[in-house]
Amino acid sequence: MGNTPLAWAAENGHEGVVELLLGRDDIDPNKPGEYGKTPLIRAACGGHEGVVKMLLGRDDIDPDKSDNKGETALFCASKKGHERVVEILLARDDVDPDKAGLDGQTALTIAVFWQHKGVVRILLGRDDVNPNKHGLEGDTPLGLAAWNGDEEVVKMLLARDDIEPSTSDMHGWTPLGWAASNGHEGVAKMLLGLDGVNPEKPNKYGHTPLWWAARSGSVGVVKMLLERDGVNLDTPDKNGQTPLFYAARYGHEEVVRMLLERDEVNPNRPDMYGQTLLSCATRYRHTGVIALLQPLAVATQRTD
Image (tube, rainbow, N blue to C red):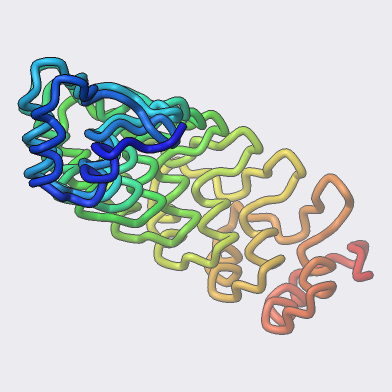
């Protein structure tokens, strides 16, 4: 389906042309063009406030109409970070601020993903926006902000009384797990300071926040987790591989040293395939890790 003259004018912000076209009786302001996008969606995507206002002035406009992906004008304005357009659309009673597209993403989740802080602030100021709403993959706004390491957005989300800080996505990832995996110390500190956050909650593969922090070599996050009471430092995943195993596997010497200082960590524990830490470190030629492990090796462990 091709675009109409109104769609082209709206997309490019040509207010005079839009005004002339809307003066005709045979113009349908909701007629979708390519990809099912209406003139209003195109204007909102471009941040053309004047055109958006003109279109919303029509009695026959549908401000919440979706395109072929289920995305609305509000979604597109939020995705592009057009704060004023977002405010104009939210002033309408017939715009659903929490409407999800076909992939489950809402205006809030997409604004969080692209780190449009002004839009996030506007949306979180609405009581009818759910800050815990899951996308298609089960990702929440807080999970996305933690993955980004966006401390300002995390603070905004945590300021909501109805936030659920330990909610997992469909793969079992929690916001803390995302922060740990990417080494975002500031976000991890905020989350660990909350009563409702489980520092040991694993994903579906058995990977805990400590496991991810050790794997990525995030010394600061590992230190925070080691200081928490009740965190099991030697918990294996489904392959029998512990946080120490993966710190050794990826050659993170400082993390290996920190974990080896703890009595509850077994440096000679093999995984389900019979691999030991020393054999793994040797295979990947992590000489610094090998030097730390060799004095602790038992005579029976494999070194191939």
